[in-house]
Image (cartoon, rainbow, N blue to C red; front, top):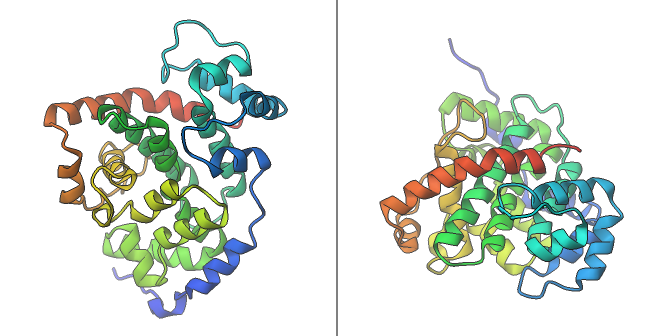
Length: 291
């Protein structure tokens, strides 16, 4: 049985079309802007951030749930937002706020064959794995988590605002059993990396996050042990562990330069696999539930 598909040229996009759509997106909520603009050692005014989070009941509940999860392993139960932010830090609160905001900005639609929930599961899995890798590398764990969470944000842009074109991408991928990046480029001429980097620039994400999104498939173009390299390896591990829940998940090609550049032993990687699986379910329950 053969599957008839229209010429891929039917669905070609000009990148200007993507940029135009991104520019029409509303600004992120003020608290997300505050937390995402500066991913760095300056945590800002804790009292201001505490007050802003406290004004949102859903964010308050999620932040407390996150702080009390095994992800942090705190010895005593956290009962207030100020206590949570003090103990786990502003960077960790960023995870909750960012996930909550973006799942609202890109709600599931009726794009045939696209599973929004599995994409978010994969994003959280990549974030968890990136944080575990960063810990073993003695690098900033929260930068890594945020970058992992956002690495595929461009796919949400494409599937949300170019649904017909992305349905053709899905059909092409199913027919040719190829990777998403290859299918996007072949069908649309625009890929999720380009869209993600453009969105990160539009929303004024920090340079470190933008570079990680831009380089998560080709990190060898950046420095050794870059955030892009960590996300690249975490992305592959998350696919290999089948944490998205998709039956047709493919492990993307791994950059030998990035793999060797991290300098981790086989034993450490086995620990990373185990820790990622152990932490994933609880973190995804916190970040991907509505209440």
